[in-house]
Image (cartoon, rainbow, N blue to C red):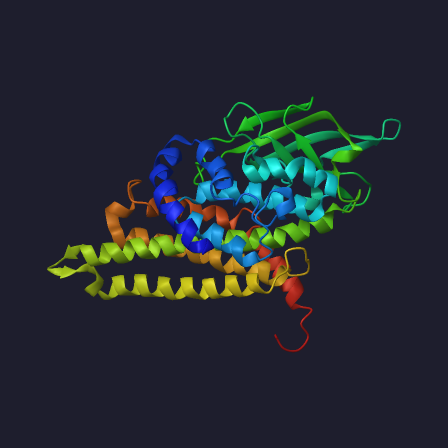
Length: 384
């Protein structure tokens, strides 16, 4: 029911606007609000008492990201930053009071949110971040200083910050002494550094640098325990990577559909294109690889608990496999469609550009290799 409902919404509402917002590098705020007010999926995994839909199933997360990305991966990326990186994170790690205060507005879409982890000099090496939150014991507040980079939903209008963010900052002397805080638009010292322009792909999702200069945060804005946010981060990265893998599935699925249709409509040398062995190879291998990725993603999603940790091997694995698979399938689609595939009017060109981010964002391929090898070394005998 969820997939069918989403597919109808995507075909009617998301598809018609995707090309325009990609070309203009603008974010469709009105349509995003409707994901909450009309579709009820902005708080997909949030308990109903806080305004969410109450899905306690990672498969639902995968379904939404696959279906949205089959039409507009950039729009889906903004959805991911809002619904997974902020909303789901807070629903798992926040206090009852924090959930009551913040979640209803993000579930409805009245406020747009994101998460701040990467910095100008710290991406994959996330524990190397330099942003600090110094504890002011006299006032029992934290003073936040630093810069965060590549922040999805960091701005939605190009001139001001987004509404709400979970910000990771260093609060102790040890490498893993990180704490996460809720930072709200309009707090003194919190500002938009720059909107990132001219990205390769995901152009309809706004990306920004955010600046924190002596931002005073009350104790009530601390999410979880001080110096204990590393576990929160790793737990949320697992569901994020499943969602990103599902985005790759959506890209691959759409590319297969479009090149299959093209191969049946186009004629060359007196034959339909699908009669040529080279084209058959492109379409059929893409389909088989998509189905393999889909089986992997949904098998992992079915067996993961949303509030658990320690699922890194396969959370990394699905993203590693599907990211490369989607980019390869998109490339084949362009090759199959020739000149038509190379222009923006035909969707596969945009999907090809969008797919590259899924080998970088949420963990680079290289970090997945490192993480997976670390986990595989612990398997002494046989893989279950």
